[in-house]
Image (cartoon, rainbow, N blue to C red):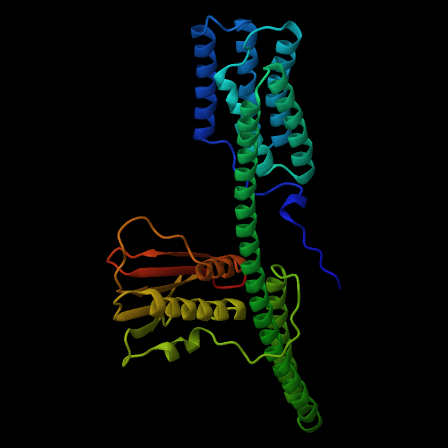
Length: 379
């Protein structure tokens, strides 16, 4: 099977275009005020009322620059093109406002958030408008070179931001796929374990039915219960998986295996505390709790500075189970660092099972990782 990888320019629309925020409205307000002030304070400007109205027409274009980047670029640069054609037709003086430089923001938005076709169409239109504007202004070679370099720098900067964002999203998707593969393996192990138990019960049932027919009902009930548990866990996990992994693996460790991680004669020492009232967990959740604790312990051993003690605590909270892994290492002052891909993978695993994960400095120092997962598998 051939896999086709689509480049950043072939995506129909980047998914990271944020909604309008306070900075967007502030930018719109500043542009509107600047256009009005410039139209009032520049008596040498020809056709001042008309030019000022056209400059104000850029305001709605700025609001569309992320969700409709091509339309915003066509509106903004269309206004600039109208002024250039008007200047060329009537041989008037300078008709442009300095606030019209906001069209560069629209060009940046077009390359940053537009699809491939939109970028090609929009940049071609911008190139025509720039050429007409330079011709109308009778620009010299120095002005032509400087203006062209400015436009190209804006395009290059937007392309750089676009590539970095696309690379980040690809890494996130790879992490998610890796977690899906891990969960698929654990699902396979769970099913293999239960089916093996069913097979053993069925074999025993054949022998018992011939010798003690009254015991056959008990064997059939055990097979039915085991099959029901298997189907329930399969249905809950298949909802979040797309591919099956048919490789044979040994049964995955779970919460009951966490005490094996305890170490009293090492630095940092590891203490494990399990709630006695923990219910029977679904196999995916049970395995995920162990993996999250194991990964958190590994991170503490690698990154916790001067840590002498790591505590793994698992407690039931209603219909959920809370895992808390904390250490007494030293934390650096300042804002929290960006999460690494290890933490992102742990968060993806928790989310796939209908839970959540948080990590950060603890109230008493050190680093704390907390995961909350449902007792049963996600619906």
